[in-house]
Length: 267
Image (cartoon, rainbow, N blue to C red; front, side):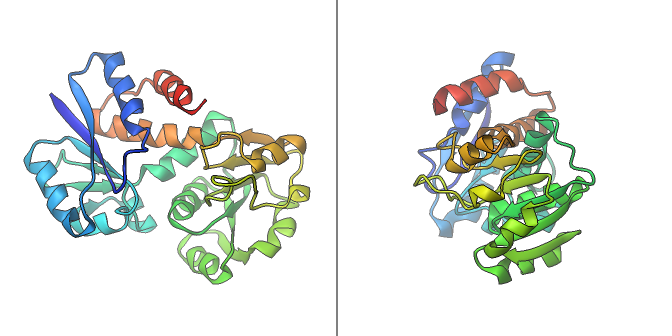
């Protein structure tokens, strides 16, 4: 049996096992997707132990995305982002990748959003924000990063080509001529609030929120009311899983099957 899994603490809430098991069933694979919750001090031991036991690949989630860097060989994108969310054990040494960036780009592409030459506004400069910033920039967009702490946005902007850093107070001006807006913060997950003023949203803007619980956040409701195009957070979650599956197996993922299972869990 092929074994894959998720490394994090906690991981009991994760939807990843359901998404990946749907893909295994579709292809009739003799495979399973397990969850592992090591203590932070045991992360390196957990990664080496998984490799010794023949685990084919691991996803990595909070709080280990940055710490895992010390125990793997990074690909170029994960090195630039400074975080790992997927480990592949197929080579001489475990290799670390970041499929969050791939997931964000593919979610936008799924909705026919042209990024090359786009003017993008990104809210949030944390871990998810870093991945999305590089995804947007690498696809050819100029990226205005707005964050509650302006200095953190400016720091990220120095690492991302064609990016600038700003405070949240600049959002109205930044969005006036923007094509794409991505919320990469957790605002909207716990309460009915949005990180973006509703009057800054407009027709011709595509708004993606990486929050997927709830699927319809206050930001997306405000965007729909402004006649903007909306993309919920389940799409990025789906496509980061798709990218991991394809890297591990070398097969094209059954995207629609995985999407159906994911959305059945979220509705």
